[in-house]
Amino acid sequence: MATKDITLVCTDTKRALIDWSRASSDDSKVVSAWNMELCKEAITMADSLDINLKRVIFDKTVEADEFLEVIAWLGPDFLGDLVMINSRDSGYMSASSPMGGRVIYRLEKHDVDFYLEALGIESSEPSMETIVPVKLRLVG
Image (cartoon, rainbow, N blue to C red; front, side, top):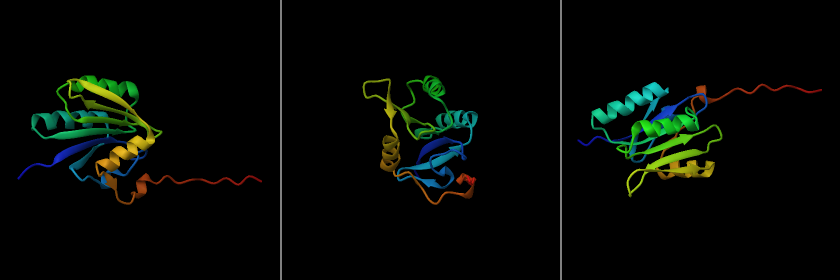
């Protein structure tokens, strides 16, 4: 039986774009890690176990400089997508180039939405922990 491809998501559940704990994808199994160390361990383990890691998505867990460090850490042998979603739901994507090496694209919010939609990644209803209560203050 063939192993399904993996989408690894490094996420902060309080700030995430979608509820990754309930996420599914048309072409891969979605696996979450809650901090950078766990994410790096999962990437290393996937490589050593010969698991096809199709993409790694950082949903509001890294800044641009940290994202560049991850790209450098992985090196040219990693052929999957690396996507960074920032607090404005925009970000960057690094993809392998057919000419060798990697390319980096800037993503606007609509690009991030399109990317997730194109992959068939969606979330069912958000869990209660992703809903932030709002306090109203009467001015009078």
